Image (cartoon, chains in turn brown, cyan):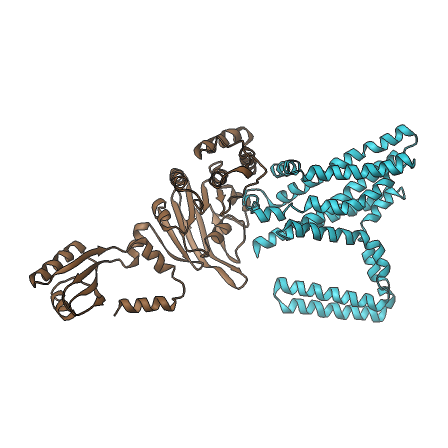
Length: 325
Length: 288
């Protein structure tokens, strides 16, 4: 449905997009996730034909966005980062203008506008000037114009930025209802949001695709393992002698150790519960108390942070070193 | 296109700029009309129009400044450029909206010759064809203003640069007297222009061979022609620049009473040129 091949975009000497390629399918919610300046907005602007790429191509339903712009743009509704609103128009005037731009037939225009207004709950303000609207209503008006005419592909650049929590929930619910019949692409730097709404996540970092997959798949991708955190009242040699007899332990990381107590992290891939039981039983058998035991899962946040890591800073390096002591 | 045209037109009249622009030109035209035609009894309204042209230099930038600069500043161009409307229609829609605003005072001017007619002798043909030339001249100015507005994000810069460009064009006739007419200065100007064009070609193609050979061939041809027939270069620069004196066409209508069809076509071709250049600035931004 949307094919993006080898996009490269440079702003002066800075590379915003570096050979970005992906393919998106129908009726799914895709999330572009990445830190600020990763190239999310640039990608969306190129997808919608607002700016051109230095090289590479974008195909929407097989139509190249630069060579057959009208055909390609017809199936896209776009809400940019800053909603493109004309302050001197009323909401209704603005939406009629957007409808005309989108070539919605005159007879259906009123009906279509009423439909999006009621979906986004902006009927009451439809005769007010956009200049006087609050940020939340402006965002909704922008969203309404993107959704107007119900194009097959709806692209939303950070749709919930600057909204209050109630509005965020409403907009998210709205996006989810859209996905039943449309392909929705949204960008965000808020992880929880993407995790909650999206079927499929594309993590973009430094202009390239760092990883992609369903939220679950990405979590597995991080290490594919779960780990057990332990605090044991014993010294290193004693602990090692006990752990020696337990199978399925991949790696033991010593986080903190002293004469009478050690904090360790054990990586394991199979049946974490079982391994926990084995460990606690083995130490109990030896009469060594375990003061803390917990299972930690790698979250999407870990994946995100790891994948979008820029050049390792010295501070981070030290931390890592500490861990592996 | 009609959507953009209608929106622009409404925006000009709801944001007052259109109203003030039209009112300003009508008042200025009215003052000239009162002084020259009513009080002094001169039967040609076209003469009064010549005075209004000077006011266009300051009022057209106000009209054209926000056409694209403001859209870019407010990022509303994203709505237009991502909608399934061809680029030339977007630009034409905006341009036609501006010319429509300008047509309002021109329509009012059409009443003035009739008033003269009531008072006695009138030269309706001269007056109405002068109003037509005046309208087209204004359209040329608007096209230049629109082009300059598409180059920048700031309406103020657009207005100031348009005002400067229009003033330069207006004064060009007088400035021509100060341009050296000798053959060698003609050659130097040709070579400088050639170098600038080659530099632009190099900037665009990044190909030193094409730009270099262009520069080389041009240099040799110019110098050979200069050595063989020196007289060709005499008065060259003033002669070329003379063609850019836009107001001459209007004066042919207004003061020489000539229906200068070629001049009108010249106006139209300049309008097309600047609309084309505006389209190109957008294309460049999207492709580069």
